[in-house]
Structures are given as C-alpha cells and as structure tokens.
Image (tube, rainbow, N blue to C red; front, top):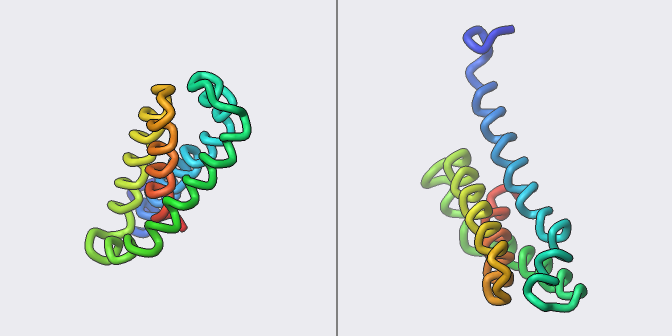
Length: 116
C-alpha cells in the first residue's frame, strides 16, 4: 500500500511513534552513557542512580503540571517539543559540568513526560 493510498491516520501514527522512540532513546541514554559522563565530571559511578532518579522526577513534574499543554497544542506538537527538549538536554549533559548533568537529567525527564 502506498502512502498516497494509506488511511489518513497512518502518518499521524508514524509521527507519534517516531517522536516517542526518539524521546525514549534520550531517556535511556542517561544510564548507558552515565559511566562516561560521571567520569568526565569527576563523580562517583553511583551518581548515575541519582541522575536517573532526577530524570524520572522531571517526568513526574510534567505529569503534575504539564498535562493541560496537550489539549492546547495537540499531542504530536507536544511530543515534538519533548523530543527537542530531550535533545537539548543531551547536549547540555555532554558538557561534563556537574550542574549541567543534573539539569540535563531533569530536562530529559520533562521531555519524556508527554510520552507517558
């Protein structure tokens, strides 16, 4: 079946799925790259657990206060904004600065919020 003959909901489904995959990749990058990031920042390896916890704290904060954003802007736009925020957070975390690691983890969590 070609794209032109596809039902109108297929492109929306593909866009939504793509955004969710991108955001989940960003969220899972914290534990995967954590040993490198914490070593670069001079932190103990167990700090990865704190970074992951802060990431999920960001998701919880979004769920508490950010849910009204979805009806206003639409789910695909909010997912796109979440993916962009998570991408920026990864760049911020890659700086190796301790405060940037923790802020980046929080922002990744906020970007992950719309996927939940």
